[in-house]
Image (cartoon, rainbow, N blue to C red; front, side):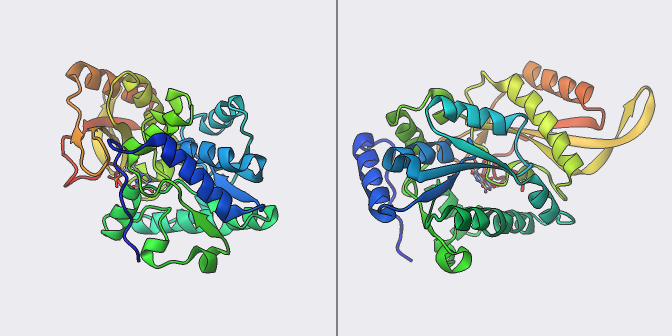
Length: 322
Ligand code: XMP
């Protein structure tokens, strides 16, 4: 497998990069159709805008609602892109993903279930129906590094693991951002004229909230972490951190409500300072902020009795919990 040459954010020529990638995409797709899945994250947003510059309406963009998104995310993302003149079709596939996750607690098995459901079941069918021969995807170098190093299987990495997407799924995958890290992707987003709210957004992982539920990601547990996420994101929206997230633990702890003992859930909060997600340090959030978040979470979500803050760096921690 050929080693990928990194393009550093500090030295890259953004306009040249955009022009090169547009040409590459046009050459690969010819006069055919391509398809891509937009999650609303920085990488997939940038790849969607780049692909539309290259192919116009010949790129069909779908938002696959896997039931693992944050509150109101599918409609918000589609509306944001509509404003840019890019049509996004929202497909509700939540049943298929939640069924595939049933009974699975192991992190890598969870990722595999999501990968297979996405690429084979949902996307495989869409590609066949659309007649597209190419899938445009926002894989970045950090995804490849961590997967190849065996730290974490990122859901969108294949070739570097010896998997031929053409054989496995029946279509080619184009990855125009694969030489970049997050900082470089943000620069390309800016260069493409995307609104800052799109390219400066905090990262959100491909496996969605399933990466933030330790143990089985049941609909009820996903709903719980979704509520905690909404509270945390609202509370930290002005904090200039790389990323912040709420995690639902598998273990429960003794707590009390109405002077009675309850055996309740624990939420862990993480907030990271990082440049490229390869290493990260916990943000030194003010105690008042942390206490206010804990209060809001335990007041709003009756099942949660305890909230903790992660004070470990990556490594040894990783950014997500699963
Ligand atoms: P980790 O947890 O590996 O995350 O330190 C590094 C960055 O990648 C984002 N991200 C993912 N993380 N699985 C993950 O665990 C994925 O499929 C994935 N996709 C993106 C993550 O949010 C963090 O910014």
